[in-house]
Length: 79
Image 1 (cartoon, rainbow, N blue to C red):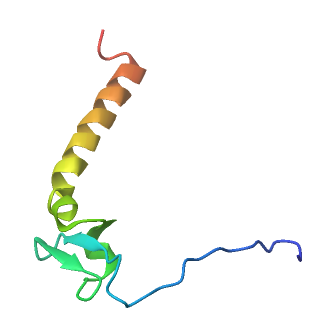
Image 2: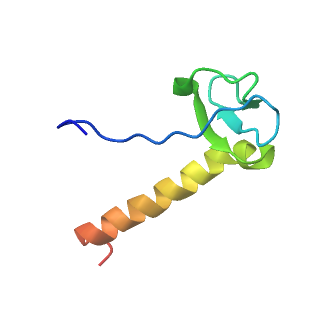
């Protein structure tokens, strides 16, 4: 392999309908599928189920709260 080059692995894409993904669209406030997904800048995901995609914003809130608490703990603000 030439200097500066590296091997890349990629899964094959399929349009067979099996193993589809779900996304939460922040522009349309709805679950979208591989067949109708908006551009990446407008979606969260992919998720394995429509329910997971529908709860994406709640997971974002929970993770942000946990990260903020960890940042505060790290900075010594919880004393």
